[in-house]
Length: 85
Image 1 (tube, rainbow, N blue to C red):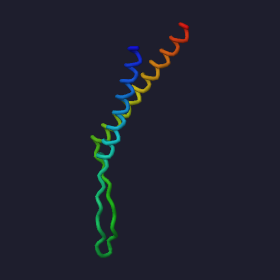
Image 2 (image 1 turned 60 degrees about the horizontal axis):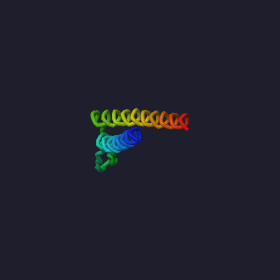
Image 3 (image 1 turned 135 degrees about the vertical axis):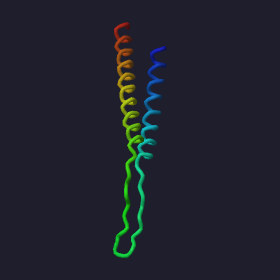
Image 4 (image 1 turned 180 degrees about the vertical axis):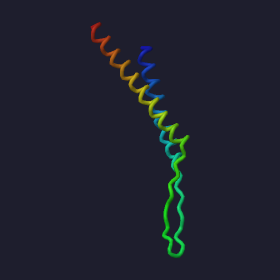
């Protein structure tokens, strides 16, 4: 019973990490629009904000590691139950 609770907690934390990574990635891209003037055409400039992008990459990595651990715990639980009964 305890192992199932730990797995559910890990899955919840992994999902929260992915949501936080998406929000961080969105903060890491800043688009500025410049209107056209005379012979100069209008254009959009994209600026990348490093710390937000690094945070997003870190959160995705943490979510992946936690997901792998949750999968391993689940497989261990299934294997343990199949040998018992």
